[in-house]
Length: 236
Figure 1 (spheres, rainbow, N blue to C red):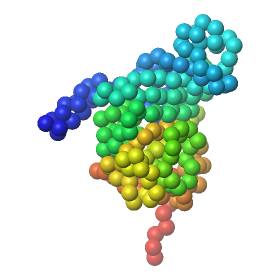
Figure 2 (figure 1 turned 180 degrees about the vertical axis):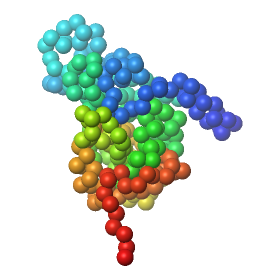
Figure 3 (figure 1 turned 30 degrees about the vertical axis):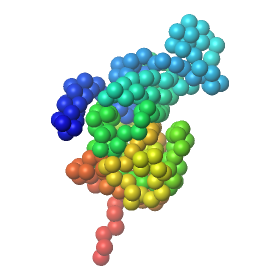
Figure 4 (figure 1 turned 120 degrees about the horizontal axis):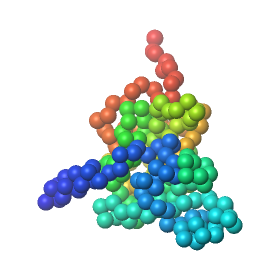
């Protein structure tokens, strides 16, 4: 019965999923199309405004910093905070932070977030673990180990100096993870971010502090070469 429910649930989400792929090319317009209108705006002074308040007078008095959204997946409430380059409708996303009301497992990521799954399952994505801080935008208590996914792909000419970085706050049934060897498909995600980051960060870290691990989001996907464009030394 449980397996049947999982199959039916997966099929339902695939039918309902938005066609767009979440990445650093998203804008205020595409986010609204996929997730609906924002619920709150947090201004640069950390003051909250409802959409009604902001549309009426807030935008005349303050500068928007973070837009907050709410949606549901598999009857689980999900909060999403988004920072944009500006408050214009076509402005690009700088950061998305997604926080389910309850943690989800890596093996359920495709079902819960089908519009984001192409990022973590791409052959050009390097999945890694690190003890180094990946982002300052994770808000919950973090494990010493952070799970990351670096997506190096072909972008528009004006955005080719960036890549998409996903950072996951991972746990083991509520316990903090202190060693990458404990990460697998059953690992829980408490929250995660999607951010635009300079390619130089990827080049400087992927062969250093960021240690590539098995891609438990898509274990059958074969990676296409070295995502940072470096030539690996061949043994003589």
